[in-house]
Image (cartoon, rainbow, N blue to C red; front, side):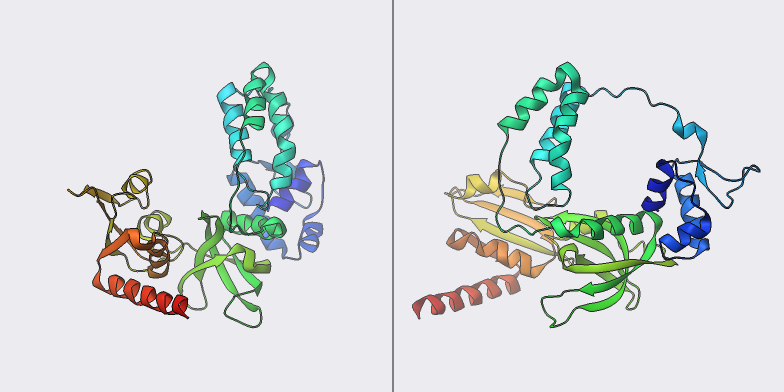
Length: 316
């Protein structure tokens, strides 16, 4: 659909047959995509009768000159801030870097703040993934989400398999969690929830089949119940932190459901309800001996077992 829009914006008058051949799909799919474009605000004109005909084009009203755009100081600063927060290996980073001078120009005299932010902000991440080669995959996933088109993942490189796999995927939303980009959706062949790491998708194609969102797969619920990426049955977790680490615990929101309780000896008790045992284990272990898991008992036993195993490793 985005490809069709680009052609129409470029004053092109391709025929329905040409569009179907170019995008390797059926004419019915092109007609459906044109209807979606109309629904999102791009009126389509066709033959003299006004119906979508052999050579669709954008309606004349869409070609009228747009009023000049002026960004306020805060708007320009906010956009530059967003650009500077994007790591070097993220998708669209090259395009973002060239966008900053254009933001300065749009901001006019107020662009001095944006220029100051550009030179005043820096930072870095560690353990990041490289998404520079994933831009085409991301754009196709976005198109599939907007048009509710089923995808065929042609090459998914799972770390647990020797060879790439091929399967169907209904994408609902792209999620950026802890520095990783994921496609939340459904696996229609198995009728269950699917969360795919975007960087592991080597290639995908959009099918001519539409899908309907499953109301059980709710992004807001996912955010409320998952500790990180893994969406499992939530459990109540209670962790007590040593007094010298309590200030660092108080400073951050670790989960939307968290509650803090101050203890008499200066320690702080953190309670939250979330799923994802592996990610919760990894987070607790990152605190070393400053964290003491109180609940649930199974999580406490697992932590103790892992620490004992680590101690044996270091003794060797």
